[in-house]
Image (tube, rainbow, N blue to C red; front, side, top):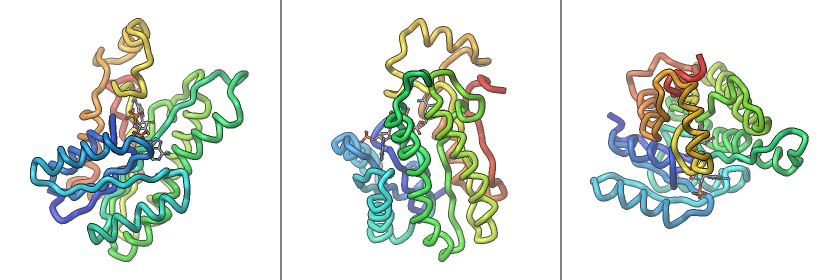
Length: 246
Ligand code: NAP
């Protein structure tokens, strides 16, 4: 149970972040629902949590902006008193083959996916160090572990998150803070909705369980890492991919 804990979930207005927010709320945590543009969707997630007696607040912030990430963390602390769990989930794709990938598309993906996580960690860690406890969970991707043609920017950002995770785990473990990553495989969300049925069928062929994952599958792993049961786990990357990448 996560009663009396506060979780900040970036990019929680839709998809995997939304499922993580709902799952952590079900465990009793108060949730900060971060979004960048979809305020009404974020407020729907808040209402859904409040309907079941939970506490939640939507806060808009572009996590790639250092000051906005700082204001997000400060507001979370002001309203709920602490940030005990940080889930760096906000992410974007701007796919393209290297021959055609623009500098802007490379930079933007790195700014949101990798620097966004750094920005939030940079502002949350001092709070966690002070309270001598905390959980940081970074949502990477199996693409960051094995690469993917057409996603050089995205794969680099997600591989970077693995390095960030392992380094912070070593740096702040002595302060009672665990840092882990979850690497989803192919999960059905807006991010993957552009793929044709034919592409999805082809993807399933490479998945041992022969089906795509759901946001709830990822949320379950995050809940475990946030729980007391994962107290002795840090610096790890847990793949939630139906057996796509081993
Ligand atoms: P999604 O449906 O596209 O949702 C993305 C979320 O991130 C939205 O809530 C969006 O907010 C938010 N966001 C985007 N840019 C942001 C920024 N600059 N600052 C703050 N929030 C921002 O994505 P998803 O599929 O749920 O993916 C969630 C995470 O899982 C991502 O890190 C992704 O890379 C990772 N992942 C996904 C898959 C998959 O198959 N879907 C696989 C592996 C890893 P708005 O609604 O306001 O735009």
